[in-house]
Image (cartoon, rainbow, N blue to C red; front, side, top):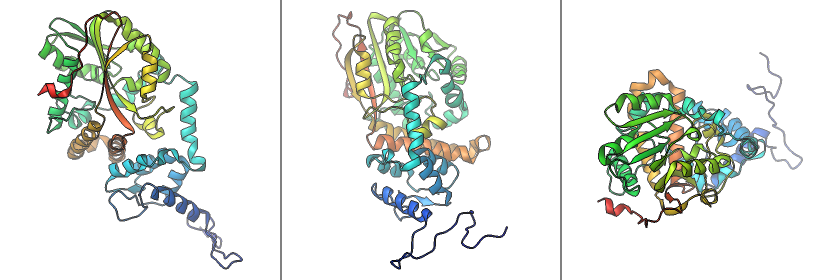
Length: 406
């Protein structure tokens, strides 16, 4: 195709004239590139720089993607191979520590604004939408998670104070949860968001409890049914709002992030209804250092649809007149190490599982794990364990601290 004078290969017209001052006028693409470079430099990130955390542009469409859709465009551009980074986790850490996630330019703010509007005016975690997260994320494939997680498939933050590997970190976390719950033989335990059943199986074997778990993932439920036939476990494919019965202890690990602020009251009302008056409820959840509406657009689109990370203010407000807080334990920095362990296992297993998933999935999953590591390393992400009781409980609760596990 014949180009007009001054037209580029992409069909845009270059501005290559001189102003009345005699200086070369910058083209619109040049201006946008410079604006983005100036912005990233605020985080110590240089585009095409020499540091291992610097962004290396492989395709000029990177600029259009980021300037058009900001964090959503950044993630999609990485999936498409438009840019690379030797230390992606450190790049994202710097990005978040500097607050660049909230400094989108022009039209790039639209995905962020749309996410806020959705979160404010729609119930993205309604019962009708409850199974979407299971279908899109947790049903991705048990082989993927078996190659990434520990032997029990515990898909939440490990506890690393005394651990030297992922397996021990997750076992220590399970033991800590069971001790915080003061589990006793014969008690009935409810696990809201039970995953592949690893916590229930541990509690049944080590503490002699009968456990009921609820999940929205068919793959998770089938795995638990296949692997724990010898244990007194019941696994339901159901939304938490439909649960019935009474339980001595309740636990929820890594599920509250899918509840949503519009449903916090319903969630805690449900737990209050299900828990015996003298029982204990342990809530293990990711937390946000500040209150935000909506979630990162890329994470919401590709990894965790309808997710919402709570702040401390949101949790305490929802707990008022429902539960007392007996203990609040933060070990968010351990999630960085957990995610890096998952990433190492995923990368080591990739040659084996790559034919099933393909390279674009590889880049998507890598971006997910390393960005989340950066989220916790920046301290924007927290990890909280709360022990909650009803006012009717008369026994004094003594907080368990990790040193007592050794």
